[in-house]
Image (cartoon, rainbow, N blue to C red):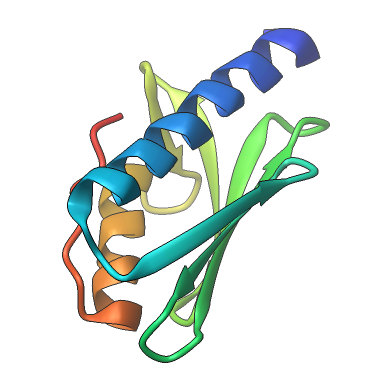
Length: 106
């Protein structure tokens, strides 16, 4: 996959995450800027950050629980260490930091 294809996939992923947050009704805000999606939990101000790393073809997730790297494998974004899905880990991070449950459908 070239960089343009990677960026297109990540743009679609970020849009899907934004839609899931909007549809959930959770008290969570987000800002998408310069390849980074910053998710802010309004109840306590904590943040979850997703950033694209085009040079290595990864998405990085930073949350209170730690920093994680994800690569597209078998049509799913998977943790490069554990193989866990990004959708699951992002949902868990939102629940842990905001107390709100969001299902991500990507």
